[in-house]
Length: 258
Image (cartoon, rainbow, N blue to C red; front, side, top):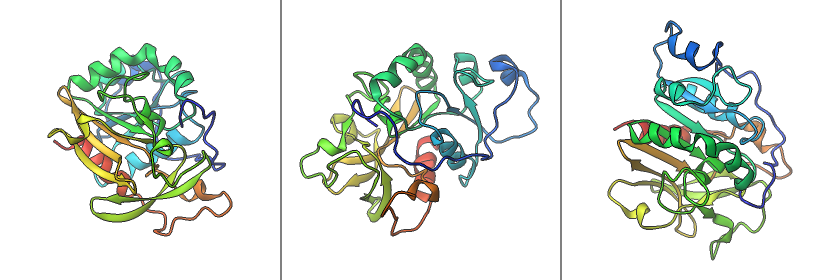
């Protein structure tokens, strides 16, 4: 998921997961009687994300130890991505997708609302493309650096944009994660007191981190902690750790818990 990549190559699509899109648009979303006391996580679903990626992120949020009620937002959804909709949410999640440039052209109209939401105390979760979009040039500017491809790092074991599995050091332990042309994170912000580095690639560059933006928090990850078994349908794709979601849940908890 980078400026030269059109689509995520995984074939499996996640259908029928428990995320809910509420009817009636943003106003109805804000006014609808609450029968579910879980905090709301708005999950973008649209052409700036790959098919099935929003559902994967929603499933990760809804199965977290402290679960969220995932609500899809975006073009064609009952809930639009607006300041009013964000005001009713605890988290905004930007899933993986295709090229950064085309995705940004679809998302830049929402940049001010997303920045204001996080700056005012909201939480942003960016997965792969969503992590690229968290940076600058182009992006929401929630982290103060342009976000670049891990594949371009000197010493990277990844040399193409095919689906693969990478090893990371996550909080001191080796784990394996689904990966498809994801970013690394560099710059002074990764060493700042406000930043928690969760994972590093084998080159030592950062693979997942949580940092502050105003009164809010920003969690970004290059590999895919939301990947379920269907993501490993390609030839030779296996995860030696098995299909586990604890890394994604750690990212969520570290982002939202003050």
